Length: 242
Image 1 (cartoon, one colour):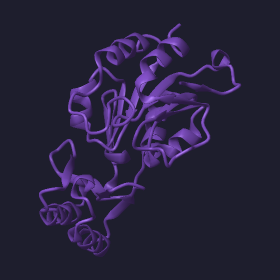
Image 2 (spheres, helix red, strand yellow):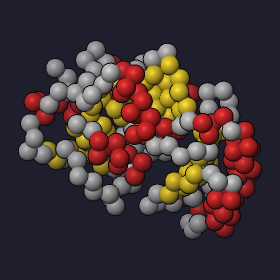
Image 3 (tube, rainbow, N blue to C red):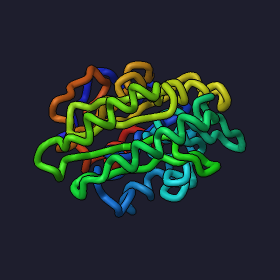
C-alpha cells in the first residue's frame, strides 16, 4: 500500500522527474529491465517533465535501457550526459587509477561473486560493483580488494548489504544532478530512489519518493511519499500525469 503524507502533491510544481535505476525503475538483479507498463507511463510523462536518471550504472547501459530520457547521471555521478553535453570528474582521466581498478577486478575471482563493471564513454573502467550475496559469507578477497583500493587512493562506497562499490574518484548522484539541473535550468525536481546512494538526492528534492523493495527494509528515510516497488507505475499515473 502506498503511504501518503499530508502534503497535497497536486499543489507542488516540479520541472523534472529524477529516478534511480536498480530497485526503482527496474527490480534489483533483473535482466529484463523496465517493465512495459512503466515504460508507457514514462513516455507519457516525457511530454510534461524533463526525465533524468541518476544511477550507479554506467552511461552506455542506461542509454540502452531508457534512451528517451533527457539526461543521464551515471556511475554514481562520475559521468553525465545532458542533452548533447558530456561531463565527467577529473579522476575519469587519470590512467593510473583506471589501471588500479583493473587490478582489483582480477582479484574478485570467486565464482560466487557478481561483478559489475562501470565503463566510461571512451571505454575505460571507472568503477566496480561487487556483490557476494550468493556466497553465503564474505569471501576473503573482498577485504583484500578494499585494502588495495585504499592503498591506491580509490573511493569505496559501502552499503548495509553484501555489496561494495569502488570508483576512481569521489562523486555522488546529487553532485551530477546539480550539474544536470543547471544545464537544463531546473529548480524543482521530484526524486525517486531506494538505496543509500539516493539519500542525499531524496533530501534535496522538492518531492521525495522512497521506493520500498525487499532489499531496503533497513532504510526509513524521511520522504514525501513511500511507494511499494510494484506500485510505481500507478503512482506516477495518479500523481504526475495531468
